[in-house]
Image 1 (cartoon, rainbow, N blue to C red):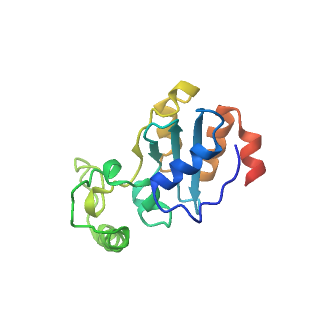
Image 2: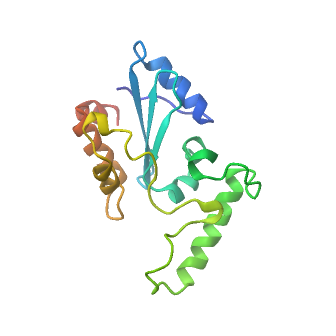
Image 3: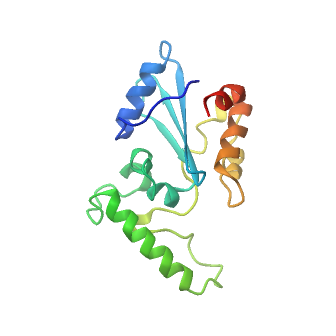
Length: 172
């Protein structure tokens, strides 16, 4: 585990290439991303396979500078949706949607889970099973992504469970 600058990373492919460069042989590489303690992502890169992604709060990620790296069209389910040509327009619409949502009546519990424009859900998104073979069940990962969870604390707990907690704290 090491800290890596993401300044030159613009796409998931860039991030995957960076992870592969850091790998020894074809070992699995886990990338933890935490943004302003509002969301976190875990990206798993296994050799040349497509990266697997879990994001704790997709709507929060969509509003951040690294959101466009982890929120791929495939992950969000917007493939072929021309309504959002770039993430900036999605962010603007998410902000507008949140303002409208705050003024709306929230008493109906039978409604669909909240989502922003373009189907970006509020809450966890992605492959919650990506750490299962390392002993972190999907339910535990989802619990760490809950409303009351702090993303920084969640990553610390994940790192401890994976046996690399001291290394994570050293690079923070």
